[in-house]
Structures are given as C-alpha cells and as structure tokens.
Length: 160
Image (tube, rainbow, N blue to C red):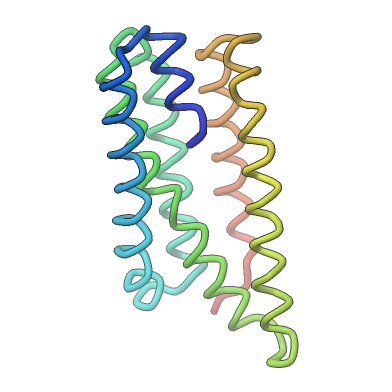
C-alpha cells in the first residue's frame, strides 16, 4: 500500500501538492521509526511472535481504514499507523531467516527476502491502476485481506 498514498491523496481526495508531500514525508519517517523500533522488539520477542503481532495489527488497522475513507485525514493517519506496523517485515523476516538457515545459507535466505520485497515493490507500482480501476474501497479490503492471510501464515514460521 505504501506507493499508493500520493495517488490516493491526489486522485481520490484531490489534496493539494503540499498535503501530498507532508503525507508521503510522514509515511517515510514512519518507515524509519518502524524499522528502528521493531529491531529491539524482534530481539526481545523473537521474529515469529513479532511478525504475527505486527502483521495482524496492520491488518486490523487496514480494515479500520475502510469505514474511515470519508475523511482524508483519518485515512492518512491510519495509513501512517499501518506503515509503522507493516515495516516489521524486514527486521522480523531477517531475524527468522538468519536463525533458521544453516550458516552457509544465511546470506541466501536473507537475499531471498530482498527479492520478495523487490517483487512487492513492482506490484506496488500497479496499485495506482487498481485504485483507479476498482476504487480505493476495494483496494483497502484487498490489502487488509492479504495482510490478514499473511499474519495467519506467520504461525507457520519456525520458533526462533
């Protein structure tokens, strides 16, 4: 969903450029803050528990976004919260991969995660088309459902 914010603010909410810049600027800060805070939490809780918690929390907040679509600011603030929870993926999956793979395969395991992130970023580029074709409401429901499925699948991760 991250690449969608500027598109949503521009085409759905007709926000002026300065609001779009603020929205994306704060979302980018949330990525940094989230990455910073999740590292120590992953070290304390472990990768599996942290990923389950954060991805399911992200899914819940994304579902809450659906009734908040009538307000640009409600949507934007919830988007920022989703960003903080969603960024757990990198430190959490790196933690699990580095402790689950044999020592000679750790770099391959972590690189595989980066490949998956790259694919997600490419798919994220198509989000604008989904928003314009299906509407923001359907995009939110699709994203929340995918997050929920992902959170449930995290129960299958090794306990490390």
